[in-house]
Image 1 (cartoon, rainbow, N blue to C red):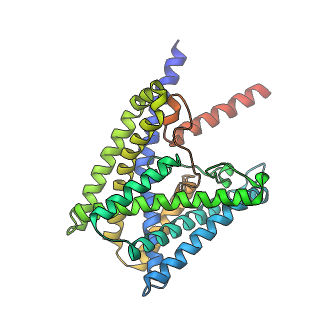
Image 2: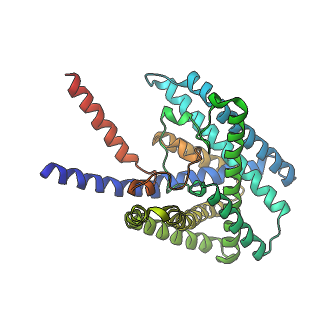
Length: 346
């Protein structure tokens, strides 16, 4: 009787610690990496020609991700080690770092394209948000708008794989798999569009003349809303399980709220980094190096990129609406399994 209660209390405690870790460690480090990488690209890639700079950035991001997706089986075979050693760990982490750069680069290219071609009218921006959200919901890929603190990906060899929307592989034929990879890039582009337009609206209305307090407002609102999402997650899970025929709708509404929280968290941290680092190359490079080094140390380098295209409400039951942030929980579970295996062998 005592052991199940103890296990339950430990699980609850670890879930709280997981949330705190995602809030305090992973999210700030990931956003700092993204903002400083973006700024360094601005400073070094044709800084006097934003259009050319954006095109180069988009091409690098698109081609880099397509290569990693299309040849993921070969990459797994080449770099997968049965027993992890220093070299295999190093390769894994720098693979994650390169993947993170391709995501930042692709998003920067997409945002540059939108800035150069789209209207800044509020009505047009709002319409773009609605149609892009509807497109993702029709494809049942709206959940891919979420980022840290709602996702924490640890550095494991399984992360060499990149899941595509239809979960095709080369076994289905090269052309079918290529089309699926292109679909993954299309989903990512829609996500980048949504983030850009929401970010534009926030910049327009949240204290546009005071960068510091604008960042602070976003940060406080974003973390408060994110905390509400985590607290209400179990209640939403109950509704998700109970109303089976409406579970996709419940899921998407909840993700919209989580998205608003994530955008504000990111905007708050990003704006603070911009406020303190500005255009200083040395400070941005220092913060960038510090961010990815610390992510490597805490074993969360893959959190730099939402590399898998996941389906909305693909799991039934309460587990279908859980966030991927089980950092300490997974660690304890892994150690418990290891101990049980050793005991069994003895």
